[in-house]
Length: 562
Figure 1 (cartoon, rainbow, N blue to C red):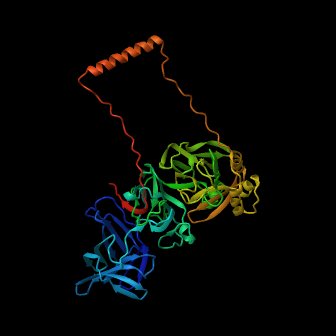
Figure 2 (cartoon, rainbow, N blue to C red):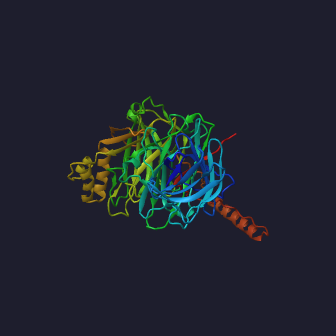
Figure 3 (cartoon, one colour):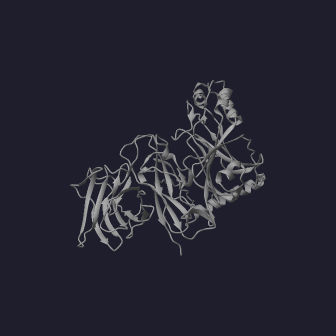
C-alpha cells in the first residue's frame, strides 16, 4: 500500500506508509507515527482497535486542504483517498473519493471515512478521521495485506526509519503477530539501505523480475520461527538519526503457504523501541555462511552431509573505506531450513583455528532464536569465518537445492557485533565445476554444473565424494557493503577442530549390598509413614513453554527514558 497525500498547491505525493498492527486495545493516544516526506512537512499518526477501526491524524505544513489515501501500486489511478480542509470563512469540508485516472477524481457513493475534526492555524492543517480496515465499498482499498496463494512468497517493500533530530539508539525489538497466521510467516529480515540508493515504491517479490526489490543487504534486525523479543546489551544498540545512519530499510517477509489457503489477511509486524539515551557502541550485524545462489545443493538420501560457507575478511578495510575496528561479537542467530541438523561457526587467524564462535549440534527449525554469547568474542580484519551446516535428507528422493522455499535450503549465521562498519555480508560458495568433474559429470559452466547434479547416481559413496569435493574446491567469497558495493575474494576451506570436552564426573556412590538393603528399608519406612499421614504435600514441577512469535510489517515505538 502507498500513502497518497497532497498539499495546497495541488501536487500529489506517493509514499509508503508503515503497516499497522497491534494486538492490544487502542489507548486514548495514537501510538504510531511517521513523517511521510524528507522535509518533515507531513506527519501521520495512527492506531486501530479490536473492532478493526483505524484512526488517523494527518498534520500537514500547509493551509487550505489536504488529501490522504491508499494506492495499490504507488500510482494515482485506482487510489482510494479522502479530502478535507477549512474554507476561508471557517467552515469545513470532508469527503471520500477515488481516482479513476490521472485526470479524474470521483466522489464515492458510499462515504466510509468518518471525520472527527479538522483544524487550521497560520502554518498547518490537522485532520483527524477514522475508517474500518475493510469496508463494503468496491472503491475503497482494504488496509490489510492478503497472503499470496503461493507455497513460498518473499514480499519486500521499503520503509523510512524514524526521523529524529539527534542521534537515537534502537535498543529492543519484538514480534507482533496476527494470531491465525502463526504458521505462515517463516522469517522476517529488516535491511538497512545506503542513503545513495534509489529505491522502488510499493510491494513486490524480493527476488523476482524487478531486481531493485533486492537492494539493501545490511541486516538491522532479524527474526525466524521460534524467535522472541530481543534487547541489545547495555553498552551497545543500533544507531539512527546521524548523517551516517540509514534513512530507509527494506522489509523482507517470507510466507510459507503450503496448503495454498486463499483469503488470508495478515497485519503482523515487529515493534522497534528507540531512545535518545545513546549507548557507548553502535551495533552491526554481519551475515555469513553459504551464498544461497547459485550453486549450493544437498544430495538425497544423506544421513549426514556437510556444507561450508567461507568469509575471508582480508578486504574489509578497503571495502569499508576506512580501517575496520575489531568486531566484538555478543550474539548470534543461526539459520537453515527443514533439512538442517546442526550449524557450527569457526574462527581462523593466520591459517590457524582460534576456536568455535558458536554452534548448535541439535538444530531445531522451530526454535530459531537470537542467542547471547557466553563472553564477547573478538574478530579482527583478516580473520576467516567458516560456517559449517550439517544436513540430513533421508526422506528425500531428489536433490535439495539452495533457495527461498522452506523445502529449499540455506546455511547462514548472523553475527551481532559492535562497533558497526559498512560491511553487510561475507559469504562463500565452492567452484561447482570442480565438484561436477570429481563426480565424473560433464559441464562447461556453473549452470551446467548444477544441472549435472541431477544425473549423479546418489548413494553413500557419491554423497561423501560430493561433500569432500565441495570442501576441497576453490571457494568464491562474496563481500557486500551497505552501499551495494560487491567484491569477490577467494579462499580455501580448513578443517574444523573440535575442542576436547571437559572431563565428566561420576558423582554416584557405589553402594555395597548391605547399603542397598538399608536404603530399601529406609524407603519402605518412608512409604509407610507417607501412607499413614493425614497431610499430603505435592511437589510442583516447573513447566517449560516454548513460545513461537512471528512478525511481518514494521512498527516503530518511541520510548523515552527519564
